[in-house]
Length: 183
Image (cartoon, rainbow, N blue to C red; front, side, top):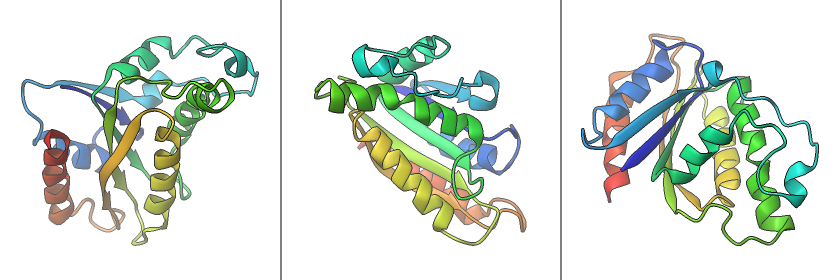
């Protein structure tokens, strides 16, 4: 199974990394797992050039290899902290670049711009004790993935991480969530 993790935190040892690590402990060793660190990838933001309205792909070619991996994945994990009730900037830039699939589906009438069905999961950390950021991110992911033949099947929110980091119960829930991809 090919698992692609979209890692949206700038901190490689922070709360999001700990939650992702707990999830990965439940992954089979035979699975092909790739973690894409979006702060390193630095996706160029969409500038509404209109290229994807008429053609497959994007006028910017910085994500072509990444998009091929995304399209080939069986499972996509969105691992992100909440920044101002949404994603950090590189994750937002990446999701904006998914416009190519929206245009293919709605404007060019391609039923499934991505032919391979895949599952998606959310691993979200929040410094505060509220659900609002998770709920907003979940809605964004569901809507974006709806035209990408990708079904959001579950998620974990580790909240209040500013007060003691990720809790043991959140780590356990992330580990348990990994089982959903095999069902």
